[in-house]
Amino acid sequence: MTYRVLVTEVTNYGTLFCVAGWDIGRSEMIRPEPQGSNAHQEASRFWSAEMAGPDRILAVGNIVRFDADSPPATFAYPHATEDRVVTAAGVTVEAQVSAKKMISAVAGSVSTSLPAMFNGFQRQANGKAFVPGGTLGSSLGAIELDSSRVKFFVNEFNGSKKLRVKIQDDVASYDLGVTSDELRSLWRTSGVASLNEMCAQASLVHIRAGLARPFPEGRCYVQLNGAYIS
Image (tube, rainbow, N blue to C red; front, side, top):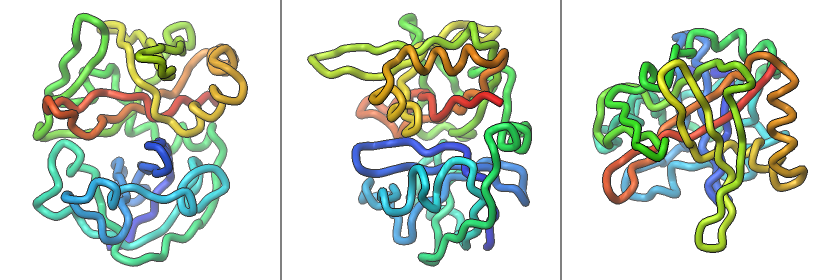
């Protein structure tokens, strides 16, 4: 089956990348995975730096075309809802759009709150949120918030610094890890203040959210996959 997808998020996992985007023809989010992806080799489900990231084929804002199949039965929910396995090596770029046009094009993916985005959503007292592994429902989505409700910060744990964000929707506040490759890169080069200054330039921030693969305890934690202003 052929797909035309507007790439909305590229997230970083060490030297590998996860990619997601808006299926233009079917008006839904999908997560393309490389040819040969399988549930028993986690690394097989991620893209290399040769394919994904800034100035690559799978870059945010690119409209790409490829052939893909629905995931095999071994792929677990909720991620299996959007997973698609590319059936051939060829992924081609048709066009590139601005952040403003991207935000407009993916309006159908926007929810009213994080709880409305994910079935089985649970919020912990510390603000972290998750969905139990195996839950039927989406693993990708978006919300749009006033910039005053978005605050990036750095958390240090066991000597390691991690970029995180606090957001406030109309239901509650949340403390999310940031996996966006673009935001992490900006943080490393310009500091966390630059991220907050970027958000302050607009009244609304388009927040891309997604679920991590299940942790050992079976929880798929909510993470921030991207933040864009128009």
